[in-house]
Image 1: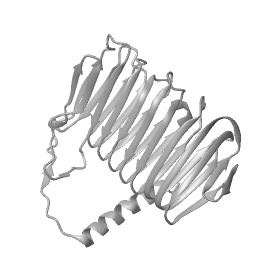
Image 2 (image 1 turned 120 degrees about the horizontal axis):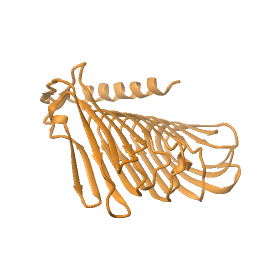
Image 3 (image 1 turned 120 degrees about the vertical axis):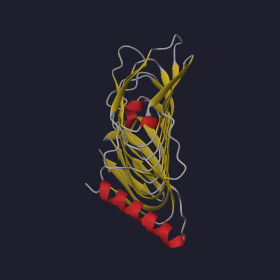
Image 4 (image 1 turned 60 degrees about the vertical axis):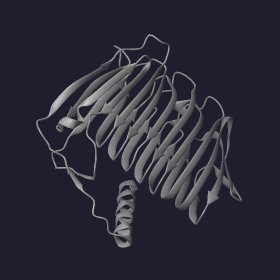
Length: 287
């Protein structure tokens, strides 16, 4: 599959362009690696009917999945940089879990044995979930949760996010903002959102709207020089309007074109999609 080569090519191109444009001498932060530690993270369900959950994560690997049968959040954090020891702040129904006290004053230098891994399970309490991360690897299965809203913001990342089961409540809004990344979003119809906004820089992105589409949904996609693949299941009605620069648009399956408007034949609830791209490749496929 071509996702990773395109992703790393874009990163290299960006770095080369920056190097040719100017020279900046930035301080370098040494990451002092020590013994590996594993902390248990446990947050009980709040007394209120819903919660606001903020996860602030730096570099490393973050895993999220359903299954916290004893509360709101349960799992582990494994790390070998003392300043990355996770912190949990609880203020009523607002919960913040963040990556320690490490502060950057320059470019971090990671040794080969650097480790920072969170493996967290979430409970079925209705929640607004906000994930903020840096350059990291994310593996998220959010199926079967009760997400009232979802926001993900990250830097250069490698993320796979799946709604393997339908969201248990109606999601008001799903927002995803990323830098130069490789991101794959799967079973998006199961998110049960009213509106979705996806913003990205250069990179490789795959948005799969498989799952159960329960109502008309609005989707806005804004991307830079990138490879974007949009998949809609056979039999699902979709309307897509494109605006942008010199982009190559290819169609397969049940997609039809009329000017800058593209339609996917189907019935029932409809996806209304707007796409804005600077340049790159847009593929519209039937799943």
